[in-house]
Image (cartoon, rainbow over all chains, first blue to last red; front, side):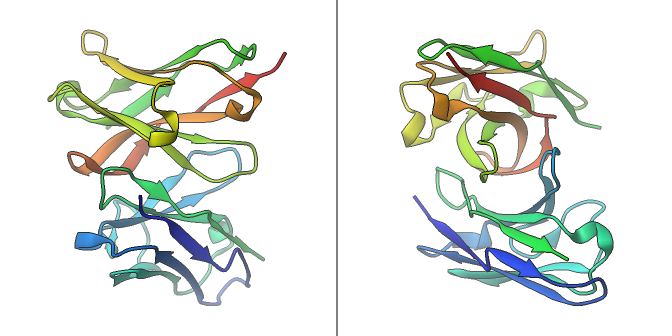
Length: 107
Length: 121
């Protein structure tokens, strides 16, 4: 099973700033099978990025994903007030999908 | 437009079982694969297992093997997750998801609204 470690656990930032969230894998994530989700309190997660860098339908272009192998990044270029939430990465390269523990993006 | 509607909240005794349903609409049900993901209070997301109705196959996370059963009823476009031997640590919100990507290598674009299962004596 691939273990994902996200950093930092909490990121404090302000609207208009750039945010960079990291996701490290215990072994190589083949075919860049990595996704990112945003979750707000009381709601189901929302898919942002799949295949490491492809934006899901309706996701603003201020969200971008990059990386390969064991190191992946989610970048939010200019934070909007609605972007403050918890972010999870997820790998689907092996038979047992797994999630990172999450990064809380707070004001 | 794919929509997943789950059954309502449940309160269960330790040692009992719970069965959560997830009714899908939009698209061709038999071509979908589904997974179940849970989230304990204040915690992260945990994949429990999935089903590919087209192939009649299931795949379960090792920590839930023997306790979880995922099924579908194609006649009603409904997926089910049954968890047995409930303990307090199983208190969580349970989400159904429709799988995207390759069969057996899913990411999750569509999610149900979640079902809170509380295990308490």
